[in-house]
Length: 219
Image (cartoon, rainbow, N blue to C red):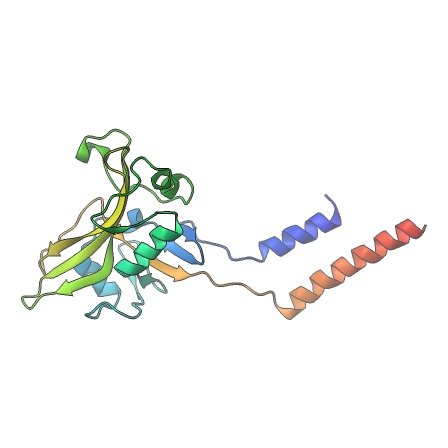
């Protein structure tokens, strides 16, 4: 391997290293919803701050089961819809299905790497894949119950392809859980800038390689 190749590999290795659970879309690192499946909306709200109405940021502190959410943000319905658009979904909306049997549903799983949280047996559709998660968007009722928005993408062929959100009611204290529903959590991916000393080593190395090549040509 040439010196130049080694230097290029070194430069690439200085980039951001993502954790095993990361699904990178654009400039955000998303936790795969399947990792937080089978947790209720109220359980999530104990780890990630919630205010009504659901505006502003919602930073998480602590673990949800075995998944450490510290530093992540609980996404609102609109933030998840923006994620869907970034992945190529044409028009996500409330209980809306678009472009049946299109290419975009499969790309969510095959290109971006999300894991299906659904069980095909639930709907009797072989090969069906879907990813579902609680968003932070919710309406807290006076009796302590909540209407929480679940955002999902379905890859199910001609009749089931879709990207949408739907409201699910949950009573405080019931810990209403779905084995096929996780949560939507993200954090911006930090851009790692090499330290001056590291950058100097790289530049000097490139300069040295250039001088060596010039001497070889002159010889």
